[in-house]
Amino acid sequence: MNPNISVVIPVYNSESILPKLVARLIEALKSICSNYEILLINDGSKDKSWGSIQKLSDENKQVRGVILS
Image (cartoon, rainbow, N blue to C red; front, side):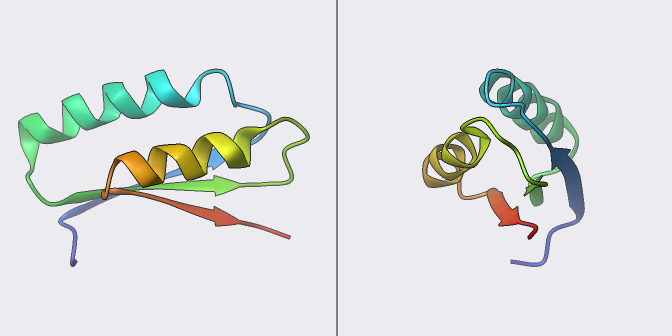
């Protein structure tokens, strides 16, 4: 996949807002482009942000997660 638009989002202790954020982004991106990706970059979160990222990426092929160490 060579996306036309890549949205890169740093994630830190954002477990509770990620599903709504991704849903709103997908809605907005679909209206302007059919080929996009959302990259969620987990930056040492202490909550369950990584689990949320994994779930979102399982549900949406346009969402990918990366863990920074």
